[in-house]
Every structure is written in C-alpha cells, then in structure tokens.
Length: 151
Image 1: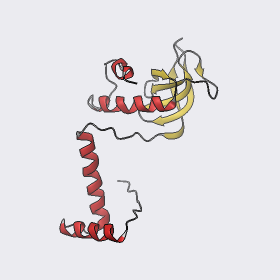
Image 2: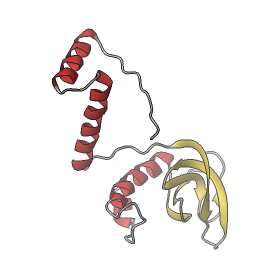
Image 3: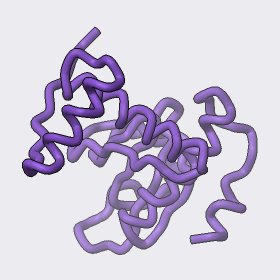
Image 4: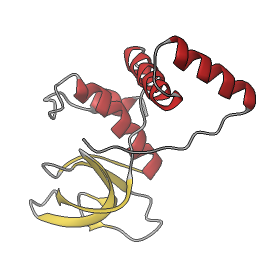
C-alpha cells in the first residue's frame, strides 16, 4: 500500500483538543486519529449525497470518438474515468477561447457533452460520478440528459 504524508497546522487550542481525542479513543498518534476522523467525515458526506470533488490532472492525453466516426487522441484534463478537451465532437480540438469544452468518458472515448466552459464540464463529471458509482463504477446505460438539464 502506498502511503501519503500531510502536514496539518493547528493552534495551541486545536493541538490540545486533538491530542486529548486521540488519546481518549486509543490512537497511538494524532496523525492516525486525524486520518480516521477525515475518513468518517468523507463517508458522512457520501451518505448525505454531497459530491466529493474530482481531482483533475492538468495535462493528459486520451482518445475521443468524433461524430464522423474517427477516433483521435487529444490533449486535455483527466480525472478518470473522465477527460475534458477544448473543442467539440464535430471538429475535434479547438483554439484557445473557442467557447467549447467537451466531456468524454475516457475508457471508451465516448463524448458525453459539449459545454461552454471547463467548469461546466467538471460540474457535470462530478454529478455523473455520483450516479455512476451506483452502477459499480461502470458506464451506466442511462442517458445523462436529465443531469445535463440541471446545468
């Protein structure tokens, strides 16, 4: 298992409270207690239906199926299983400030939607990720149109 390390800053009051809680719950360190506390917090968010933001890689490459049947590789942002590229499914990658960003289901290259901003694509991907988790992490057969209508 890979392990990541984080530095958490606390004032004196927080430090004392965290140490007391870690001790009272039998954790060997504040760090292990914080890890458990954050896991419980994320689980509560998930149960409440709140989205956990996707982590987007700044640069990546993925394949996309264009409307004319061609499959091309495009540069864009990745947060598996999603990719976002500037442009659309008709003409492919577009110039900077073209006003078109396309969300793709990266494993298949299937275009999900073309929207005016990258932010709108990220919002849609976050909404879809919650729906797709219920489908066991596989692409659902359902149409994303109802989710798109809310944007």
